[in-house]
Figure (cartoon, rainbow, N blue to C red):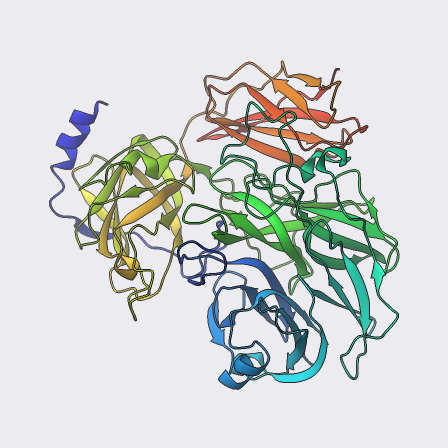
Length: 602
């Protein structure tokens, strides 16, 4: 349909019918990035922005508690990992233990009696940092219980009643661990052990996943990758878990400000090592799609024994350090290999309130219906056109010319589709960096239509008073629609009405694409950390999922390539000397089709 015709249809939008679609108040799914209010801190930011990173979740007395870098003057609590409420530190402990500052990269752990926390303060004049704890986290009341040397990116691990503290940040400050006295909460002298080597030359790194710090664009590939890397990676963010008497020590690389931020895992038989990096690294890699990044993470178990990873995802538009949080299922197979499930990791993900197997069920099976769909709007700023709201890119957005009530955006889906959920990702355009008290909230109304003339009100958040920057709504029953309209009631922080993407999930009612059967893989013979892939494009596809791994039964790595016209990809994250196996799956708005597995050639 031509845009002139679309505009004529939109001119019929005068009123909406009162029929309302039911949305569930107990959703069974969520969608990354997590819909948290996020803080407005200013760490290295050129401009204050909504962001958070380096998260930790602990389960304590049947509730989940979430802590994260420069997010807010406190933490969050949840009963189900979907709905979160804010808790703020009591002022006294905030002033004494946290130095009256937003905390950074917190170390948090829990036993049956307390939650413990060590803050990595950014105020370098403090040579030590407090260990604090609480038996009543709901109250916000904590007490100082010990003191350790100032450490970077710490992690507390409790194993059989013994406390271990891991720390390290940067190529010249590799991961170390020391034991902490469980009574005095001070370092037991002579117990510190170095767990991995420094990285002094990125060209000598055996693994290509150390490439990329400050050197990659916002795309998944760059034509001049080969021999371009000079910056040292910034390994950081240690985390450790124990499963079946094996210890899994993680750290993040190459650095938080790129799409390739990922976690590496090392295996050992003791909490103090030695540890060996696994052949299936990186552990978590989320590249391509709406939002990328999966590094500096915490892996934890929920009430039902399921494993999850809460992680850092990258935005980097207002500033390189603008970030969000994501949540992915984790599993261990019979051989003890650990997997973080990030495939379609920014599509709706199931959150069963029971024990489940993420190898068999974690995505909801609802496909993106909004990708590259035409949009029209009440107004648009130059350079922020309405089609930015459907490009599946968190780093671009549409913006109206004002933040006034009545500004609107209409998405034309092109056909009637089955809608199961919608994620509205608001952008911060011309917001007030100094904060307007009581103005940090989003209020809007969303409508759907089958013909562009008769509209049903599906979501009414006109009275909402909370910040919902990545609002995600799951419907009780599927909704049939060919048009979706969002109308502004209130834009946050005095800014303009702006949307990064309005993402519609469901089923397009068609067939999945034909399989990719002609995949060709050429491993670079000069530097085998690189490989070039090519395949014949599928006219039925909206994009491709490129799977690869060290074993034919363990293709645990995946990169998403958007657009049916794409038919090649250069990988730079491979481990030198290690063979790989590959497969390309084709997906669209109605499903996904597995491709034929291929080996590599030099």
